[in-house]
Image 1 (cartoon, helix red, strand yellow):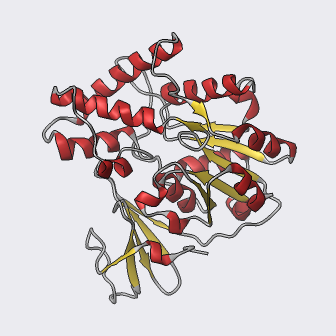
Image 2 (cartoon, one colour):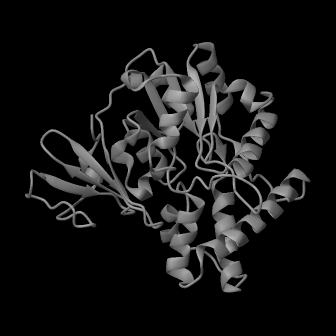
Length: 318
């Protein structure tokens, strides 16, 4: 399976970078998704995926066909929106950041902005908002305000004074995770979030669920890295994260020890368009779960299945 439903996509004549055009050099057709973040160039014997980037580093990847092969050897899961309900909180942080940049405390994002401010990297979210709302603002300046606001809010949450229900476990997640463990399937947590914002989320969720420490439960936890600073080493993790395949590829190959030849025995569970693309470009079957922006982004056609609950997912994969 390359696409579960090609009708989910929009056909275009030419790739946006001008590299490929329908009917020339073997190109059968070119498809894109609603949020225009990714384009698929179809040939007779292959499909290429063109992942665009507001950070000026677009790239092409092969899109491999997938199938679900049981028994599963590995399950890879997203954090925000899939394991923990937190997307509204992080979108609110983006909104507060733009409000700060505009010096307008009443600023609010529009519904049309939502597919562009969730699921991707912090820098991509901010660059989108800069382009639309505060042109000319530097990305570094916007990131500075973003992390100041984030650290302040995270500290308030740790002190019990922050935004209520910022991080709550997804319904059914505990039973699902325990079932995965009972069946001896390796499990990896994969997030585009930097460690300093991602770890408190999953720690909070595991504390709520009474499941101990997440690093003792998961076989692999892969984040987007550590924020560098003056005199401090780190990686931004902004150019290679979702929708690029590398976080999922690393989690499976390095974290779980499952090679590409066994990729059909691995599934990725995601609620965002960027995440679904990442899973598929890494070569794994993608199962979508409702609550994120898969439908709005137009990436449902990349999912083998789209479910509302973990019970539905369990019936498919076990």
